[in-house]
Image (cartoon, rainbow, N blue to C red; front, side, top):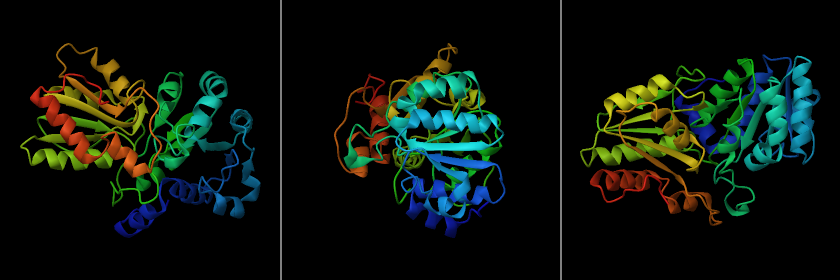
Length: 331
């Protein structure tokens, strides 16, 4: 595995999530002879050009045909290969939904579906390319493990963990180039085990993907307002870490979920479903994208527009604590 240190993570951050996925796959190939990688005509966009050049017999470009790609990947898995199949989030999650449901969910083929450009990362390409409903679709399919890495270092961890995991996995890559750094040193990563990045007694913020870094920024701003905040990286959206959630319920006055996804069907919904089993659980504030098609703009502008930055998250939490916002969905 590549070495995770301050120097390497700075370089990976500049490359961004998609290029880092390609770097991780290239490193994985050195030790996984039965690795196969498939792309829906997005090899370069998925950061896979170097891998394709180095391992041409282990790379398949299926063309813009995500449904066929998942079927081919399932066939390869049946023959003992470990296939990673990649495309933009809305196309792999929704265009190929039936194939994911049958081949990965029902048949439990050992396929790793990788959604690049999830959330709002595609910027000016607009709503046709935004992956804002993919978790709601994929999370509803039985037998799938769903992971959303927080930064480039965690992408490396997730690729290796997914390859070692026996069963279908959906990997959700958010962010663009200059991905903010969450981890600058090596750490223990396990599928299904959330990571507490900060301790606090008033509010627990639970986030995944690009929002982990923003949650940490929000926690610092809230600390200046005398609000003590814990931050959790819930990198595995399915299965959820119930033990981590129980800690949040027992140690916080408010639980907050933050995600670069619609407020319907994603992490916030998953936590709400879990929380409904606990009569004494604290209030839940769900922050994410509104249930509507959004504007088309630069990626960072979009995050700020929807309040999915540290200052916006902090303001939403303060408003909720002050009682001036009763709606649990940020719109």
